[in-house]
Image 1 (cartoon, rainbow, N blue to C red):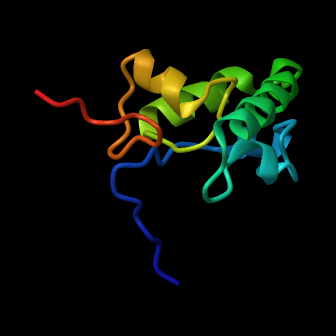
Image 2: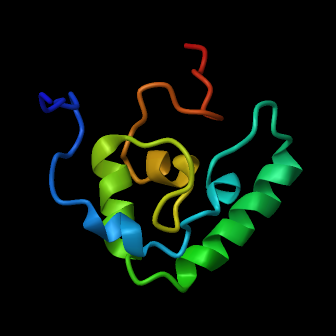
Length: 99
């Protein structure tokens, strides 16, 4: 079987993902379609609590920043990564401003 190269993604060792406190909790870290703002705030607050006790929070955050990930990673939302200068290609919740 040929190896698949992921363009624009980190190809380093990602074994840390197996130790994430978020394993099995995907619903907390990625929004459903048409998620309401209040539901997003509650979901992200719960995700933040999970990340707060996670032993791999730092590599998770670094991975999300380097790979322009969507969702909640390493204790940060997409909006927080965007505000920190780590841009998404098409950020969710960030609207283009009229010139």
